[in-house]
Length: 334
Ligand code: TRP
Image (cartoon, rainbow, N blue to C red; front, side, top):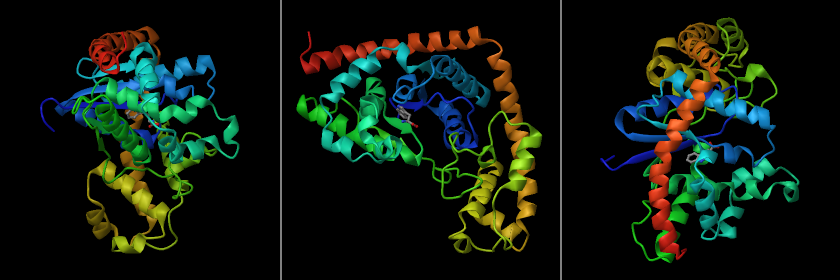
């Protein structure tokens, strides 16, 4: 990455962030913050594409900010704000609605998943959600976007939209074509109950996930109960094929311990999964519970969190306004 690089990412304001969010996004955000200019946005406008109770939405935005800070994001280094506080996101989204194509949106698999069987009943917002995501990124002319593997298709759409805008308005290189930064090893943390599904806050069983606010006791119970494999830990990765739950536990262990999967397998080959689980619980407890406690503490002072958002909004608005001025001019809006 070069000096003019700008990192942007958005996180949905779900209360109760879990290990998947932590390993797949938050930790990565913190390490990027050390090297780059970064903007991290809590995407409340994306959240309302599916109905949210207003009071819950407000709390979830604050809880997401608390999780950012508890994980190590520094509001003096990174820009941290909520999407709806900078109106440029909505304005650019409208312009990009007019650049993007229905055919492109019709290919988006996340819409198909989220809309379920009765697509006629999904909100229009849910359908054009990817255009708003493109607006988030392009409003800041971001060059790099850390996202989970599930957002790759949306990012490709953002690249197509940037390209088409630059072509349509004959302004080559106006929008940089944003690059995805997808974590290599751990693009997906899977459910502890079903290794073929992503760890998710919406899965019914709380045993399927480690929440950042879980107590040491809860973490160790959940790991103990997690699905693994009836055989012992194999001595090569190939044998883990078709054993997604076992692979998931090993991958989480690798990610937290920073020891490569190969090395772990070398060390643990022939042992029962209970051995791995014990070590994994210990590591998770020492890494996750302090974060959870900090989240709870930060949530006790909501006005502090609101102040962080306000400061972030001010910084984000400066970049957004400047870029929007040029965008309006390119499009021919007076
Ligand atoms: N759609 C993303 C998700 O659900 C969140 C998001 C919104 C985002 N705008 C973004 C991510 C811009 C990266 C860049 O995870």
